[in-house]
Length: 321
Image 1 (tube, rainbow, N blue to C red):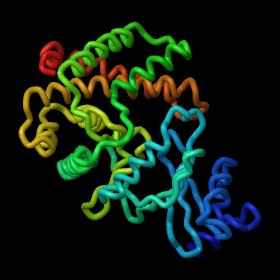
Image 2: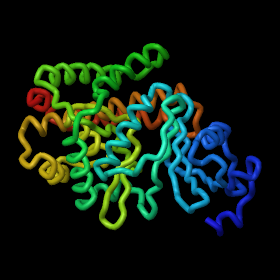
Image 3: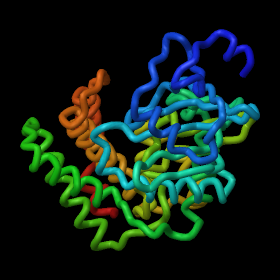
């Protein structure tokens, strides 16, 4: 910290140190001021890259302890931050996530352990056998724990997005309407056959997995909740571009023996997972003023769902659910 301080300028009455080229947003400064354990301390802070929904900051205090500060971004009021904190606490208790130091249920500001020395996973690294199997082991531990107090199935999320799109009067191409029709049919089949509800993370963005010397952790539980088991697995496989052949060792690691029904449910979940995140991207492009092209991201996700659906024996997949 001392070398960082020597090269950085003072701000906020001399209490906060930060890189000269960095401006501290008002909401971040308010969050730091509101943390009781940092009261009267001199802190060093710098922004972290990679967050789509939040302001993420690295903070180090006078005792050389490093923290991860998460400040909710604008237009994210639909996220249940208390539910996310419950997920982060669960991961900490299970040993698969960082420790939690503070959480404000009113603002959604969260302070967790900064995982020193951990590398952020990538789509490429999570496609390796080592990290892919580690991710399945993390999911098995999380899914095997007690259910959360809150439920947030992929079907709940998509239905919420459909309502938001109606309220915002967002127009989409006709082929997206066809995808929505397929989603409704798949949802009906899942419910008729029975949902296998387990506590899920629900957001397999590669940056949410961290590794250090063969140990993997998972972070960012703001979309967590009880969900259909196969939806978690389908989301991961499609996010990391696993094909059917390469996905089988991962599913065998998770299930032991992969039944026809389990495989069909995972295949269908890959499609509806991309529908969910495609809608999320389109909605976010309307409600947030950001440099990231959320519309392009959303349309790409929906196009991938449409393409994958037509690569499958889709009727057989649905019948197998």
